[in-house]
Every structure is written in C-alpha cells, then in structure tokens.
Length: 471
Image 1 (cartoon, rainbow, N blue to C red):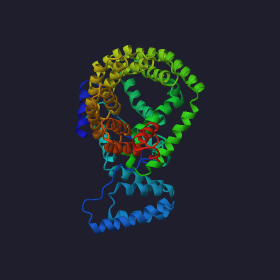
Image 2: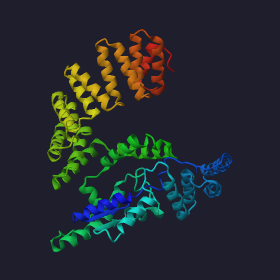
Image 3: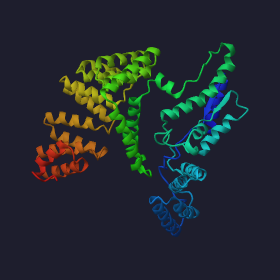
Image 4: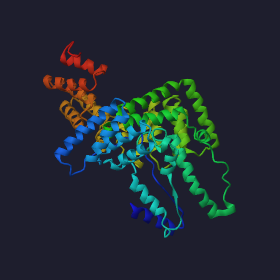
C-alpha cells in the first residue's frame, strides 16, 4: 500500500499536480467486528476457560451490569486478547459505564483485530500519514479526515451520527469530510494562482449545502432504504453483534420518513429540485434524483423522461441514463421505445443481465417470444442469480409445452438461489403437469416454508397438497 501511494504521488508530481491524501474514517462505536478469530496457539484447555469466562461477562453485559462485565472480559483477555468481538464488547461496557477513553481503546482494537477488514485500520492510516509527511515527495498534502470525524463525534467515538454502517457516511459525515478536504485544497489554489484565484467566499453551512443539493427527507429515505435492504439484511452484516437491534432502529427511522413523505410533501420536494436545478442546470445528479422522484413517487413519466434525456446528453458514455429512461417508457407501455433504450444501454454495458431481462420482457409484451427467450438466456448467463429471468423463461417454455426443459431451468435456478420460494412454487406446478405429484409436494412445501404468507403460494399449496393442508 505504501509503495502504491508513493507511486501515485510521484506520478502526480511529475505532472506538476498537487496531491491531497486523505486518511480514512470508520464507524467505531456502532459497528461491531464482522468476524473474530482466536490466537492460533490457544490450547483446548485455554479455549475452554476463555469461553466460560467470556460467557460470564456476556451475561452481565446483557443484564446491563456494565461495570460488573468489565472484570471477566479483562480476565478472558488475559487468556486471549486477539478476539475482536471481546474487544468490542469490552469497549461498549466501558462506554456505557462512563469511561470513554478506555471505550475508545476497546473499539479501536476491535476494528484492528476484525478478520474481515472492511474498515481502514490503524496501520492503514499510519501509512497515509507517513507518506504525506515525507519531505522527498513534493506537492503532497494531508487531509486528516479520520481525525476530523473523531473530533466531531461524542467522546471521540464515531458512530451512527456520521456513519450508516461500517464506512458509508451520512450527510453530516460527508460535510465534515468536505470541509476537511477544502482546508487543504484552498491553499493549493491560492498558492498556484495567486490573485487570479477566485475568491472563495464564506464556506456554506451544512444546511446551505443541503439546499444547494436539494437534499431532503426523500433523499434520506432513498439512502436509508438502500442501507437497510441492500446492505444490512445480507451477509456479512447479518453476522454482527447487535444486528437485529441495529436493523430495528434504522427500520423505525425508515418508516418514520416514509410516513412523513405525504403526496403534499413530495410535491414540495419536487419544487425544491426545480429551484436547485434552476441555479445549477448542468448538475446531472440533481436531474437524476429529480427524474427518479418524478418517475417513482409522483408518477409524472413525461417529466421524468425529459430529465433522463438531459442526463443522457451530459453523460453520453454512461449506461445509466438509458436504463432509467427505458424504465419510464416501460411504465408508459412504450415497449418499442424501451427496446431502443435497452439496446443503447447494452451497447455501453454488454454484460448487464438486468438489461437483457427487461429487454426480453419488452419483446415478450410485443409478441416476440423467440427474441424474449434469447434475452432471458443472456440475462441468466450474465446474472445467474436473477430469479425473474428463470421464472419468465420457464413460463415461455411451458407455453410451448416444453415442460421438461422448463422444470430443468427451475432446478438450475434453485442451484444458484436455493431460497427462492417462487422458483420452488413454479417447479411444483410444472411437476404436477408432468404427473410427478410426490416431488411437486416436496417443492411446494419448500416454497411455503420460505414464504408462508404469499397468497399465490398458499393457493398453489392447497391445490397440490389438498384443502386444509396448509396451516
């Protein structure tokens, strides 16, 4: 890592470019380690003793006896202090017992001992600081982002105020990073251009930045929804300590934001985007977000399409504008228009399984079943876990009376996504048509177990297993 950073700095210096290196912040207080290991030379007897003492400490912690839990945690650490989870629990107990300095030590050690290194540890930031301090490398500046985030956190324990999970920053966290980096960039510009440098003016407040970026409750809801459903509900987050509590806490915040976004509020937010775009008409991100709001929440498809077409003009080499516009055209039942956009998207990103799937769906709507099937196969090739592609291709094969091929396709999908209730249900239906009731019963039971509340699956189960067979 040191060599890579030094090479970057030398290349920049050779081009007479100033370089700002940033240390990397991380969530210490509200991000337990992802995985822990014992020291390799721990004997079975030592491990047994460690476990007994550790469980004693965990029991005290779970009862809110944080002072009492510290002693057995320290005793376990005397046997093996390299266990990241132990260090995190110890830090948490110190924090809740009112000793932030010792709490920080425990949290830092937990991060550094985490065996899944998704956070920058002490050594990484040390290397960054050392490279930035080398006098032989000219034009190198340090923005100590990690220190700034620590300094702006309660008791220097960065947590959920600045981070959503392990490293992704909240708006408040990003503002601190931006101000810290600006503190290094501004002197460079003044030093390079002197009187020709544009006067910066007053640094905008966090609220002013939010207004300029049209950052609002809708933005917060979009981000939080991604964090909860695309990140935290999947490994490795599901293996963390206090995972259920974290998801419950953020889900409650998400529900509150969703409830607050009434139709009237969404209209107000739409006007906020228009005002921001008027001040910065070339800001693609503003137009992208506004298009998303128009399409998904306000259902103003023509207006959304207009925004996405402008995004395409600004970013002609990006596939995203084509994908977004195609989605809007599909919502308007303009499948020919959507086909054209998906083809443009695939010209830029030919490995997009999702684009092939949606292109196939459009062809199917237009009666082009052969083209649709070909697209579904390509979707599966590039995205083997794309369940809808298996489902739609199997239905297409079933329509052609190719039941064996359709069943084999469902099995192929289940080999990749074994917890797909929908594939189990469809396979069960195919097996019934093929006269294999026993195997069909096994498949529908698997579907019910995975999704017991699905009306479609319950109805299929009643047909296959008999009335009253599903509790």
